[in-house]
Image 1 (cartoon, rainbow, N blue to C red):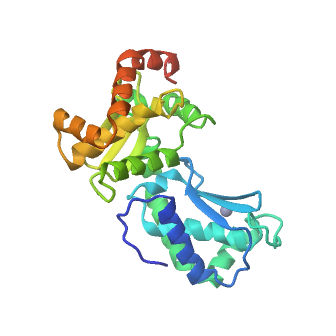
Image 2 (image 1 turned 135 degrees about the vertical axis):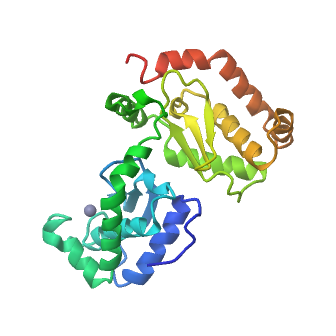
Image 3 (image 1 turned 120 degrees about the vertical axis):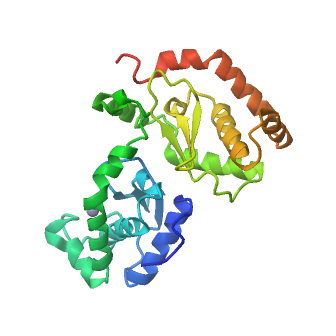
Length: 290
Ligand SMILES: [Zn+2]
């Protein structure tokens, strides 16, 4: 398995690099089918990866929870390898189908053995067996840390909300964050290692939070709704990027935003927060009728 620093921010480019190495080391004999695009999709409890084809292209999507540094690289590698076995067998790749069903009679394990991937397979299985359930429960949507948030109906309502087609995706959030980082001149900082939605209770009114232990910025889940202006997201992200890298004083944060051409964005965001945020929450919060 390829080697690379574990604490890098995991994004689509990281995944692409990872899969390229796995192909080079373990699948170089497989015929070239559809070109592969790999990205992080939604959070899921049981699905680690999926492979599909559309318009002559192959799409591999990985569980969003794999962006978390607590999930070891070998778990991600093993999942990518699993999808590449499907690819080799003609699923999602446009190559001739070798089996009727993708998981028919142990065909994956046979292929893993043939390609020198059984070691990493067992390692990943072992990790999942020991850790996945606890990890998943601690992360599922990063539910607000209050007792009632552990209620399943809360999680289900937020899941429905987040999986609605008209939401900003995790990928979009990450791309926006990286864009704001570049714009502010802190492109490579490790001060913030994760950006995600927080599935807030109705009592949580703050638009974003910073968690020092996991170095995570969490935006209120309602900001995934496209009816919330993008300026609100940019402002919250810019705020934490500047605060973690430069200064915690509001005057200085403002000065940096102005200097980097974000003054109008900030004004728009602050006006929206002042005039519309309460109404927006009262109208659209998925937990409103609980
Ligand atoms: Zn599979």
